[in-house]
Figure (cartoon, rainbow, N blue to C red):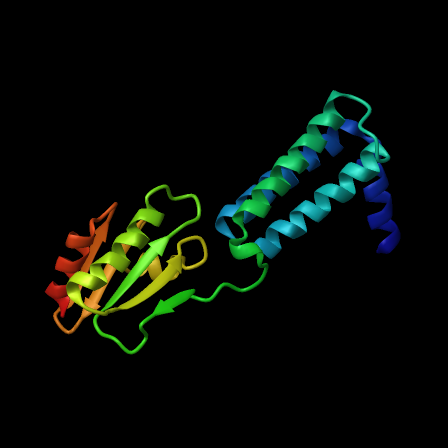
Length: 188
């Protein structure tokens, strides 16, 4: 079995177009892993891409195909670094941050690191606490908490779910502090 795998690897590495195709497939799988799956899966595809690249080029890019493979690896690695929250690899709990855990009602804030409006909504949530009083805030990273987001049928960020004794309210988009406070009061 090991010899057949070794023969297959040497055959792939000796054939430039197949190796380039393999690196491209590994790049695409790594990109899919970065945005849809767990970072560890992305790392596995990147390591496989490095191994194929190093076997293919013998550590020095010699032609345009090898240079493009190297650049695709560098780009994929850059995206992987951007996608890992707080520089940590591993399991990301859902919710990943809780403020005022003993308060009711609660606001479930769905965000992502690439969301342009999420930092403003986070500030507005804090400002809404001055208007509506303390409430529980749970933050969910949309990339890793898709099950929680799909329960509310959220497909993007920023989105807020307001949960209290008065029911559930859902809002997406950039909400002001006054709008957030109004929703919190409506579910209290």
